[in-house]
Length: 503
Image (tube, rainbow, N blue to C red; front, top):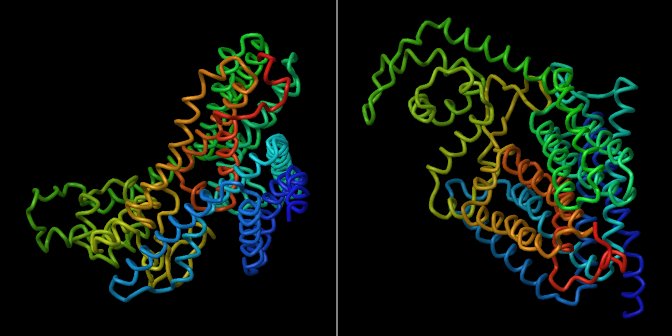
């Protein structure tokens, strides 16, 4: 057994690199599965196999198995209490497998971090292999975007408007989060590869930011600028001998700012503005904008409710809430608004729906979360599916999958507290270590990983994809593992060069 463990330890860098490389390949495979209307069982099984194999290997190699037992104990206890909360709800625990699989996807983040922390502890070369794997992922994703655009097979980030280059990937928010985390790692690699040259660093900054620039979401463009300006200033003040490289990164940021009028983000914002304006004109055409909101604690009269009904029953973005909770309760939840930007907000509809579900639930559900199946509402006349971007019959998903509040709805206050504690711990570790690493090569690398961490946190808050979709949470786990490795108090030197050489 000892010989086997020693052999595996030597192979860890190669295994970690292959693990990283497999992630975009699985994403592309998942896209073509959906394109040809095939089941996603294959990719889901492969991801579960990778997770199970990584955790099992980490457990086998770990010299501190108590951390694994503690993690399994906490997640197991939480799962049992969540299942009990679902059983106590009216109708019992419907579709338990679907609900539990969704929980496991959330568990991907802490479990993947745990095993990669073990790999980094067992072999220092894993750190470099991990960075190279993340860089290879960025190159592969950019290549897929390019090939799909050249061959005319790109589905576009916003398919209906033909805006943005997405590539053969399924989830816009996930791709935005992934590319935002990979960009600073690529710049970090360039800083290490060319320690005294500015031009290659500037080119890498531009090349690594281009996939985000072409993607189109506002958050992607914001993270693009944040990474460039943030890392440029970080390098300028933390490694003054590299001021030329810092300026090269800042110049790249200025180029992206200047190019904003030509960006897909700008084009998308123009479309959204036009749609909102047309929507508002439709609402005003109903000639009920003169209605006044009822006084606080004053019941709505039948005449007043009837006046609001043409709006709230006609809008597909509100109808599902009305169908489930009734017109009067929906009006109260929306504060009797007639603002088209509010009524047309799909995210607000889902939050409102789940908030009302929570109000109707018992204390156990509020603490440990809702059953995922309760977030599906049957719509008799059909609904507009945002994922497929077409009208469909059947059950509409009201799962708050694109907001951080979705963690609360799925896992309750207990799950939300655990997630926040887990994520904030890494930020505090990084802040605590800045003084000790100031001016070293590790300081530059920690800056890159912190930039990736901040982008992941932003995506977790605004889209939650990096927390709930395992194709993105894997990358976040790798980033967290890198921060953990760089901020260990008893960290062994990355190399003899790093212990003596100043940045």
